[in-house]
Length: 329
Ligand SMILES: Nc1ncnc2c1ncn2[C@@H]1O[C@H](COP(=O)(O)OP(=O)(O)OP(=O)(O)O)[C@@H](O)[C@H]1O
Ligand SMILES: [Mg+2]
Image (cartoon, rainbow, N blue to C red; front, side, top):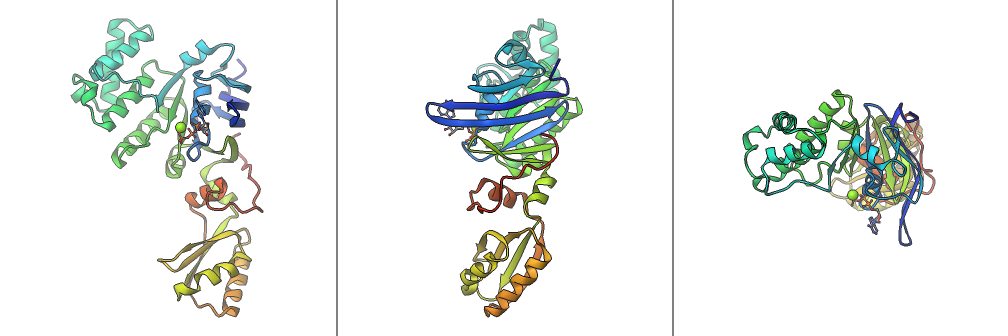
C-alpha cells in the first residue's frame, strides 16, 4: 500500500469551476495520526479540497490518495476510510440523537445491537446522553454540532475530515470541539481540518498549510511559520498621533511591507528580518525626522500578523516570496 506512511497524499490537485481555477495545484501529505490544519480565508479552496478528498467532487488533475486508495479509481474504499463532518450536517431533525447515530451505524452495516451500543458510547463521549432521546431538531447549535461530529466517528474511520468544525460556535462549543479533536488524535486517527482561525490551527495542528486563491502559500508548524515571517515585528508608540503617517513613511524604509497603523494606540508596527539593527536604524531615522517615540518593542509576530502577511490581505509586500517552511510536506 503506497500511502501507508502518508494517510492523506495529494499531489498537484487542480479543479476549475467554469473558467474559475479554484485549486491551482495543491500538494498535501499527512502522516498517520497527525493533524493537518488547512488554513485560508473565504474562497481559498478549503471546501473544494475537502470535497475532492471525500470523493464528493472529481479532481481535474493531480493525484489524490486517502488511506492508500485513489479517489478516482477506488472511491468506495476512500469513503469507507473517512468520517466527514462540518458544512454538510447530515443530522436528521426528526430523529432523536440516539436514533441518528444508530441509523448511521446501520448504514455502515452494523447490526441493531452493535449500532445501538456504538450510538450510546458516542453520545456519552460527546456529553449528549441526557438528551439522547430528544429530537435533534430541539438541540442547541452546539449540541447539534457535537451530534454531527459523533456521526462522523460511528464507523471508527482511519481519517476524519472536519470542514470548519468551529465556525459559528460560541467559545464553549469551540473548546468542546478542540477537546474532541484531541481525543481523536489519542486514538491514532488522522485528521484534516479546515479553519479560518489561526488560533485553532495553532492549537490543534501538527502542521499548518496556508492556502489562498487555490494555491499553497506557506506550510510548516505554527512556530516555523512565525519564525519565517521575517522573524520579528517592530512596534513604535508615538507621543503624537498626528505623526503616525509621517512615521509610517520613515519606518517603511527599514522594515518590509506597509507599516500597520493603530491610531487609537498611536502605534506603528512593521515586519523586519534584521531585528535589532533595523530597529536601531528606524529609531535614528525617526529622531532625525523629529518624531517623538515613547515606547518601542521588537517581538515575534502573532499568527494573525503572519496570516495577513501571507495572504496579502493587508497589502502583501512584493519583496516577500511565498515561503516554503520546512517540515512535513
Ligand atoms: N460548485 C461551485 N461552482 C462554482 N464555483 C465554486 C463552486 N464551489 C466553489 N467555488 C468557488 O471556488 C472557490 C473556492 O471555494 P471553496 O468553497 O473551496 O472555498 P473555502 O476556502 O471553503 O471558503 P469558505 O471559507 O468561505 O468556506 C471560490 O471562489 C468559490 O466561489
Ligand atoms: Mg468552505
